Amino acid sequence: MSKYKTGDRFVIELEKEVDPGMFKVKGFNALVFDESGLDRLAKVDGSKVEILDKVEKRYLSAVIKPWRDRVIRIAKTSSNIGKKERLSITINGDDIYLPEFDPNTMYQGMELDRGYTLEELGL
Image (cartoon, rainbow, N blue to C red; front, side, top):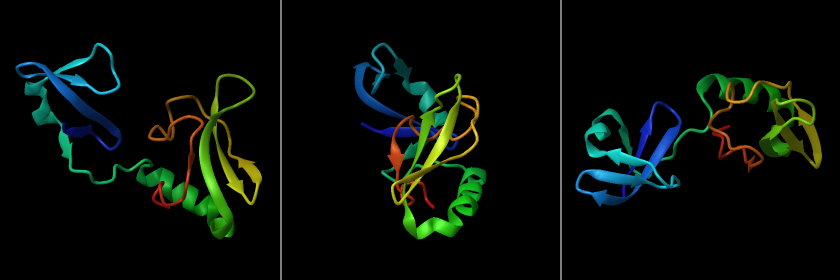
């Protein structure tokens, strides 16, 4: 089926038509989407959806600049203290942790505990 996105990050994939004009959204057990709402969404034609917004890209590009050629991965992780999140940058086996932030406030396009290459992040 087709993929659609809202804004810069949120992508839904319609899995199957359950009734005429009603579609099940992939990854959700009970969510059914009305076809009439599709005109408010942008269709994704297999093109890459950006994980980071412009501000996040600019900031991370500046942070990694001295070690760009040695960065192995960047991941969003839960912090050990409290209910915060942070970015971990792995450089030649060593991790650099950026300051913590509240969940769902920054780097919302990144999955928690998944490592990304610079290419995947558009850096």
